[in-house]
Length: 333
Ligand SMILES: Nc1ncnc2c1ncn2[C@@H]1O[C@H](COP(=O)(O)OP(=O)(O)OP(=O)(O)O)[C@@H](O)[C@H]1O
Image (cartoon, rainbow, N blue to C red; front, side, top):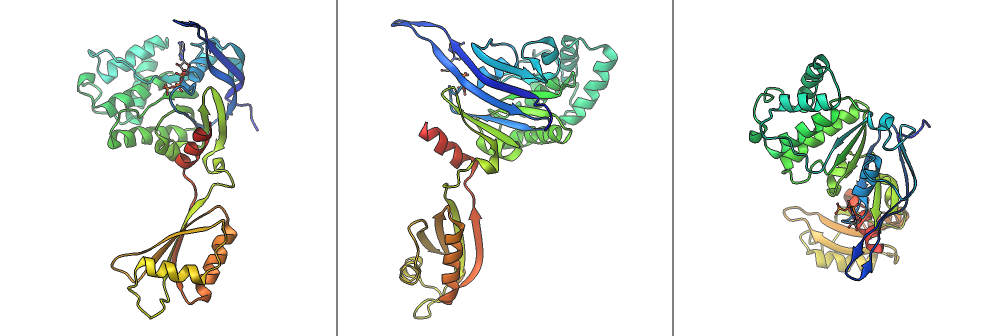
């Protein structure tokens, strides 16, 4: 494996402060360790106060850690060598209202000490990438929130960084705006950029991230590829649609009737709860819902259904979503 792009080891941050009752320190990071590899789209998740912003600010060299180490590209965070390779989109970027997209990118290019020729070339490339070509000479005052965020992504990319840190890039956007920003992130992922994304929107993270870290109370609760985060004991929801061999031959029998028949026919163990059976309206099909972490149990139920003359029309095994895993981990903590 190559050296990590982001390497955080036992990172700690205590904000020192006072309240009316005396000294009040906040342990915002309590020994966080994580790594992101080149090409990762790394999602940082956690409830309010989890320490996500503190972690991001530490990576950017804005907050000084109280303990532990953090490096980007093998260089200590905050060093010039590390900063030059990072692009940052803050949660609430403010672009002066007199700017157009083009003049704003010129301004940010100058801040990155780029020359005029490079700024002009890069501006054209980025306007194309974020889908603002043709709108580049309009005042940003007329921009929708989605266009504004895409301009924010362009400014973060001006100096062609290898690592992008995005703080809540889709916060406050409508579904269309979110979709547009997500497409840009996917394009950047395809270009091989490493992306560190802080977001509250679990569905967004599930759609674009290759790996996630879940934090709460300044601690790391879980880290890994999304499909490996669910614990082996997390139940999957299994839906089995059947043409039921209903006793009495009534294919239009109610879900309750079929449920009672199945519970007397099937030897279901405790690990699988045959929670409900419902009639799918307008069809001769009934849907059985089970909740079990045990695939062997599903296989047993399917075998028994067949043995009792029920025919399987469709089987769907829905693994726990990122939201299920998040709620379980954060709930436990
Ligand atoms: N400058 C500061 N001084 C004192 N305490 C702070 C400071 N910044 C953050 N904190 C505290 O540190 C803890 C972690 O805050 P942080 O902003 O890093 O969490 P977060 O996960 O980003 O939360 P949110 O999702 O609400 O932005 C919180 O208890 C917060 O009140």
